[in-house]
Length: 437
Ligand code: NAD
Image (cartoon, rainbow, N blue to C red; front, side, top):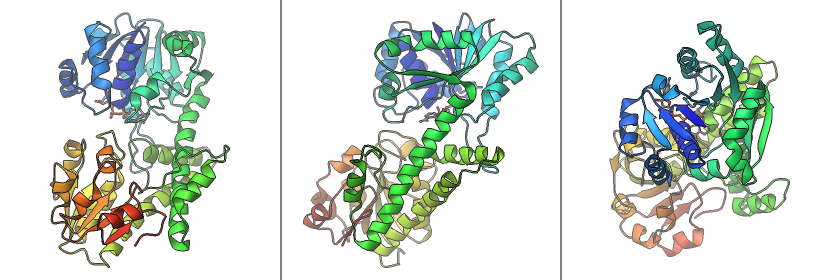
């Protein structure tokens, strides 16, 4: 089938590339000329393992293309996937749907009769019906069907998540949508993946409910970690003991500096707003959001404590600033809250991050950058690890401590151990939810 994606960002590009991989003919359309120009040169504008290789393969076989011209792209298309951003509206906490509706308005004048319009962007309950209304406002005779197909991929493992999904959720309003989506995903269903078909509203809500649940699970273990620090328990053992219970499961029970990224913060906020709007308050989600903000303050306090309260003139090497490893995405990364606080208290900051520099530089104009962990650590007073990139896990810790002015280590992801830090010569080691020294 010929498919168009509107938006060639994380979701539009990964979905487009993967849909071409499973046998469709795909054109990814984006308004950003720079993005399309880079893509035409074979360069992915985002860092995602395996993406450029898969892109090149499908471009070479003529199954994938990139364009700024939506009208041209839509000729003979059976389905168009809306994959534009739905950022948080800072004033209301709700999802900003202006990009989705703008895309729908454009489509109204360009689609061929019978086209299926698939919303892959994460959108509140009722949005797909509004997309249809917007199109009818523009063209009362338009012939189309809307489908909700929320995306569950995770940055850093997006290709695997798309190609080997736990489930594919499709909310339909009629038979054309149902048939079209089963055609599109047939190659994945043939491999045993579950295609779950629902009504529009349920599909829309599944996405938000899933993300809010995962954010809550992370926040829960973060709160338990804080309790562990106070009462002398080890959160690693507590999480393992909990996770072995099949009803709970071990995933998303890793404590850290608070969740971030392009989805959890805005999706919890949007879900809470939906709950308020429908008169069904979501107290757990609301509390999760508050606790996650507090979490970042806890991380700042941890560093302050390492220096006995005085950060003035202290040089801090920061290992990792992206919201998680294997991505260059800085959206809502905990570093965005934590580093400016350290800087405001008088610390000098030197960052090392294998992929984040381009995105992060604008946020930390006062920070220095280093190419390697050793260079960042040289003559520094502490290392603060925020993102668990493999390069930091593989480090010989002694090679870090020996170049530091004062070897102090704050490990906000628990990738090292008390014993390893002590053996490597660190004077002090603080981590999450376990007793340091
Ligand atoms: P993004 O910002 O990376 O990409 C959006 C792209 O859409 C941009 O390149 C922008 O130029 C383009 N665009 C906007 N309006 C356009 C228009 N009218 N025509 C053509 N191009 C247009 O966003 P993203 O991270 O891919 O997120 C997209 C949606 O998917 C959001 O709703 C998000 O919540 C959801 N989502 C994201 C992830 C993720 O991990 N990033 C995962 C699941 C779902």
